[in-house]
Length: 146
Image (cartoon, rainbow, N blue to C red; front, side, top):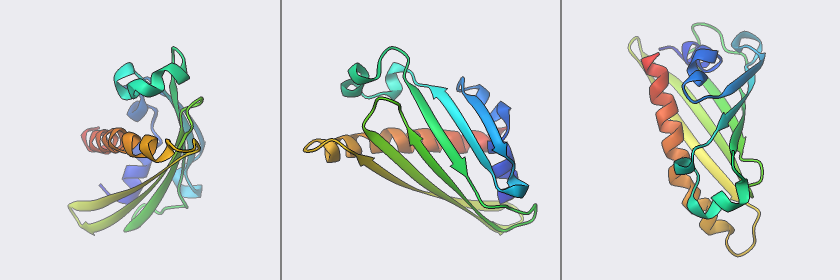
């Protein structure tokens, strides 16, 4: 897929439906993608230590943005700011898409986490990293299958 096709799939309700997410598209790729997704989290997606802080129905709230991208653009980037309301963890992801040739677009994700809790913040950040990486990998892999 071209970077524009990847962004269009991200802005498609069908992409989020299997996760039970609610998607609100504020603007589309041509004018600069901006959308908000709210997705329920299962117990296995939330570390045990965090479950007691989040209540019965934790949600992952994501804000996604990109600059305008033309249909044949070889490069695009997507910024994701995510939070779980009630959790002291903030996540920022920068995704870069680079078209290599007619059959391949390279996708690179850089994940940054920040926890506001003193003393244990770094441990929470490092504990969350594998979960976040896994969720992003699954989501990106699913885009290719749609």
